[in-house]
Length: 595
Image (cartoon, rainbow, N blue to C red):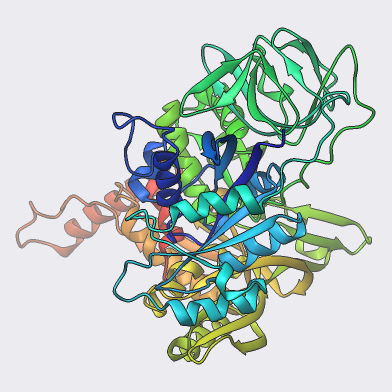
């Protein structure tokens, strides 16, 4: 146990975590040359295409120092704020963390929030200054920032380049000397914390765990504490590039267990595994349940695929514990699920993964956040979906969730970023100059305003330099109205939104214009209206496809033309009464891309 080191790599997105992990694996000869490829731990197609880490990946390395063999368990983590739950779970399974900072960009928002998370769990922090081989690296300035942030000595900061392999020896040396060995009692009853799980269609559910106390042998009977179910440990082992079976794992080890579990409800991330013969007194404190920030409905394109979609989402939830879902139905789209996500990127990735891994075609509705509605009777109702809003006459007030947003940027972009935040109903709380030309701005703003396109706009205003991180504060009273979209007088519930009254008119008008472009023309006129309650605030009309019935009347009496036009008008009227309008899939997505 004294020779085990568990550590993770934390950093802002794109600061070189996965590349550094490659170098560590090469240096410890964990990979043969044939197995090697860049960002080897990012094994999902989606991760490779987008160049981001979505899942945290665990792998064991063997490293010799002064003739002693050390087992290093590395967990590579995502850097994007939408996947911060992955990071929090990885941190619980470790005793130390490499804090990687890009020498060309300096400290960014996600670096700070991940660092605080690591410090809360008492991890030993090793600061690494990456990308030192770049011509535009600013080592001295960035070192000042690190010393201010971490409070370490300047000489403790390791200068490295994950690309060229510079400094990797020193990193490995510091991992062994500075990060403490896991503190656990190998003779106590087994307590192992599940920090991740995956679904394998041949072997069932594979749970990844870290043993805090005790030990486990192959074939033992084990029990999952929160569900109380008992299983045989058919196979246990450590995580190399592939799973590497072992007969025995002791305290401090990170490994996996296969016990033929087929039902995804039985494995919960954060649960404790113990022995049936000698159970532990209490479960390990797992992770706090994650709070979804953004809600959207996911519906199968074909109504018969509802059960398949349920199975797919359950399997996906094993691998991504921050996804939450409940069944719901919609008049326009039939049966589906109301899913909670950590952000818009998370939502996009889930949609992609449903398509690629489970071959599910889905329709996603407009994302929104959850509101608290207080009725005139004094009841409190949680509303995730605008169609679940009580009648206007019964509403006393509506409260919406607020966040505190921390934005770190270069000083030249401060003005335009402030304008953006104020447009989004933000209130400036604080402004701190971290260095001569780097500012941290703190705004309090409603979560619903950043759900759509805030991050994209922030990036384009700041030419990609601003970094953004937020945490949730509380609910506050808001002046919100429900904006409905009507097609020929019938409401399309999937397009309804709860929106700030001041933005409703503008948004309603844009929605109507956009839908006019997307809805195909029919044999009859289609009226597209935006309404607040009974009040219509915007209207567009999709003109009917018309046959020229007066073409055969050349000259002659005007009444003949009138008669033919009247006859056509009656036919169109009857058609409108029986005809229904199909809303194309692009219409639901177009709402997200409204400027």
